[in-house]
Length: 367
Image 1 (cartoon, rainbow, N blue to C red):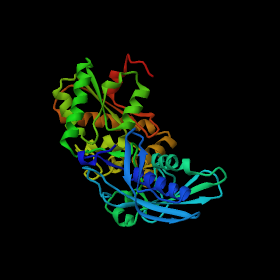
Image 2: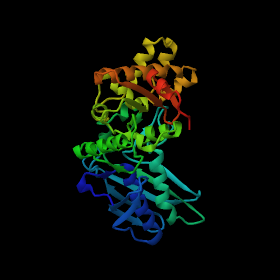
Image 3: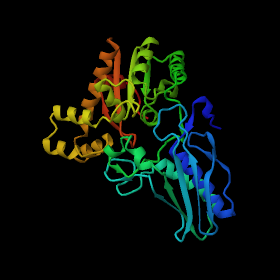
Image 4: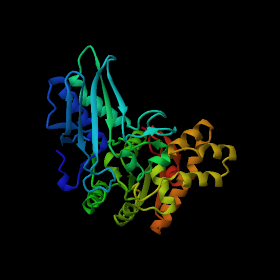
């Protein structure tokens, strides 16, 4: 179980899945439970208290889960995430956004324009949570809402991303780790110790799951050689240097790593703005045609920029971004140690490799 007293919390996606499960159970058996358990994608089971219960037997059920972000700084902490469940004639589970859940209006996000800003992992969690309560001859419609979500969203980057009318229902692991805790930094440094103890001269630093999964899928390296650094990019670079690694490879999505170009050592979204302006400026300085620059300036995310570059056969320019990140890392560490940068898109494909990473890559077998 998640022990929020130790700094852990749960995502809006977990809240939505828990509320949907309780409402679906109420609709099926005639009584909404006081609590439910949801198995998160991380494998941790969250026990969630159910609030604001309403039941219209045979027609609909609704309830809420209160968001607890643990020790992570999060503007959604304390908000109520509601799920209303009702039968529908179409088989399967239809998932909609209600009050306080934003609508995607621009391409480049993980949800298509016109859809509610409920990301793929939370959608899957919701489906898994309600499917055992479905009848064979009908489906279920789940509507997720967050009262006050539109006001909360004004304190996030959602308006800049073209997500209008509310917050996003997000989360890839289902839990919120205590990113702000010193104890979490200690656990990250322990992973460096493991890599060093295993005799690795090269350590690969990745922001999170996407970078780790992409790197291990692409390169044949032992899993313990790849260390997640969360948002602590500057801190973990310094620690890796202290541990005496002769070579450091940074790997991940440029939406995270390009923030380092402007000197952001902590890449948490509340402390570090999105990196679209950095990426566009570098592309301009490296000769990207004005017509293409005009097209990518409307992109709400770095991933959207990547898609537009790919469509125009300009994706090779992400190699320039990788080279500049590598140079900034060398400058930051104040040493001539071997460095490299590998950039991936959201589909976990390599889109940019710096000169240092190309040198390291020689002799490696591709997975």
